[in-house]
Amino acid sequence: MSRSLSLNKSLQPTGHLRRSRPAAELGRYPSSMHRLGTEIEIAATAERIWSVLMDFSGSVRWSPVVPSIAGLPTVGETLSVFIQSHGSGGMRFRPNVLAVERQCEFRRTGKLVIPGLFDGEHFLVLKSQSDARVVFHQGEVFSGVLVPLVKPSLDRPTRQGLLR
Image (cartoon, rainbow, N blue to C red; front, side, top):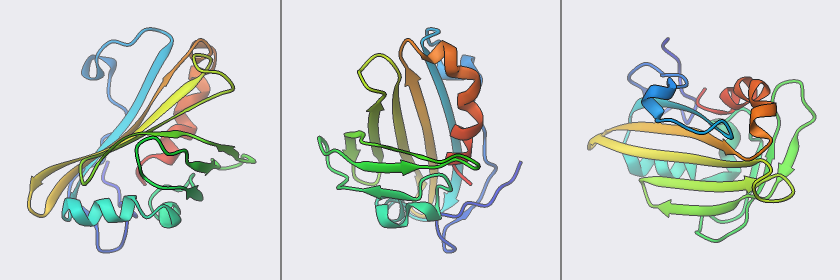
C-alpha cells in the first residue's frame, strides 16, 4: 500500500509503507510485550528528516495523534506529550528520553502510574541508504502486566500515530 508521508512537503516517500511486522520478523516477545512498527523509504537526507522529527513544536505535521510535545530531545530529559487518537479525549504523559543519536535514533519511554504495569517505548530510527535516501523506522514496544489485557485495543490507535 503506497502512502504519502506528511513529514513535510519536501520530504516525499519513495517506497511503500510497511505496516506492523509479523512476530517472526520482530523476534519473539513474551505475552506481556507487544510491538508495532512501520518503515518507509524517504527521498531526503537524514539531516533533513532529523530536523523535522526533532522540531517538537511541529510534531502534528508528521504524527496525527501527537498534537504537542514539549521538552528537549536530550537523554535523561522528561518530555510533556499529549496524544489524542480520533474520537478520544486525549491523554497527557511525561516520558523520559532514553536515547538520542543525532540523525540515527530517538527513543522515549513512558509508564502508567508505576513501572511494569503498562510501559511504552517509542522509537524513531533513521537508516541512510545513500546521501539522499533514508529508511525511517517508527514504532512502539509495550510491556507490563496489563499488556495482555489491553493488547486488542492497542493496535488501531497506535497505528494512527505512526507514519501517515
